[in-house]
Length: 365
Image (cartoon, rainbow, N blue to C red):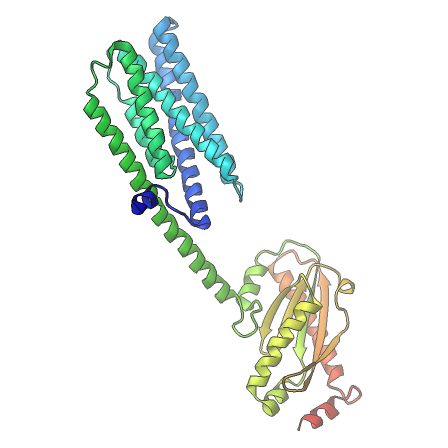
């Protein structure tokens, strides 16, 4: 019993449900557009055939075609609008699907009821029902309710004409059961497809993040910098080039494990010094930071010093910056080059005897 309940009322992960909603909206947009085109062509053909003579039967056809055109137009533009939104209200989406389902089904019942009274063939209801259970998806238990109500409404309409004398009840019943089974299988099939899509998207996101970030520090890498350079749009920015002074000597004296820890802590310090910026490990012990404010609104000194507590190492950073509004890829890297030259000037000063550079090196020997 529980298995049947779970089958008819499956629990769906929110991410998967969102993917299913997107697929459903795309389906509604597609069938609405196709339906709109077909109904417009049908209207043209119909008015050409009656040559302006409208009797009661023709009026019913005009009303039916007009209703279908309005419904297709509404469904197409509403689904298109909802697809553009990041978050769709679950209640609003449910009501929209219900309107589409009931609207198309009612139109089909009205059309086939008219055909039945005229002694013509009935196929519209079955075609529309197949489209609804295939593309406008609800949970199986609710879809069952809709299918039963649809078939019951169709049967009562036919029964009101001649007691549904030309309908085989057993065939009608079997078609209804087939629709219910098909809708349930289709829903679970979409769950599987959407699950795979969500999983693939997550895997691609992980791979993209891995390829765009430095494995040691977690900062953006050169590949990410190249991608960002393609998106330069002329905004004013400040570029900072940062270098760890005497990093080779630190590695030689304390080991590469200590060096790696200093690189990681430097990364965290830069995030604190330049909040809201884009932080890159440029290479080795060089870092690049891009912020979209003037230098004076950020950390604007040309050095920064901290102590790495675990190894008791004093770390000095040299910082060069350049400001500009690059309009393209080349202009962007020209700005980085200017920041690099500014860094060179700072490093020359911090490595000088006046700054204590030689004394710092002797202290590490």
